[in-house]
Length: 158
Image (cartoon, rainbow, N blue to C red; front, side):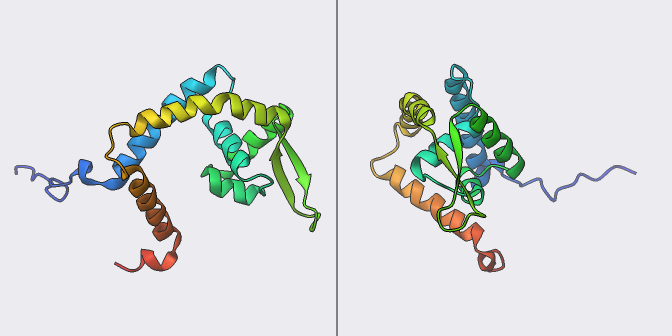
């Protein structure tokens, strides 16, 4: 008996899926960021941590996990290493001593300031050629997609 071909996915169009492109962009950018960080002995998770703490000083680990989008075990190891390297410091919360906050040390700030221009150049190159205003529209659209994914009610809407 001849074997029937499975046609249930025959019309699957990978190129038509938004999240295929999101992961392609993120993976390629992470490779380029990793190359830029190599000379500084850093990895992409450390860069995300540096950038997040530069933008939002004195984060809790929960806040930092959300900002960096890193798995908790990866973030924990990254922060431990950065504390050991004197790039990040753990601080007691002024109002609740049970809460630990994270902040960049002066060497951490200097390292961020040294690396940031290279990352900015990568970012500019990544959006080169987009029509004027499209970068803002793309940022808005991704923020909306993230909000939709974070809202449990939106998952059951369709």
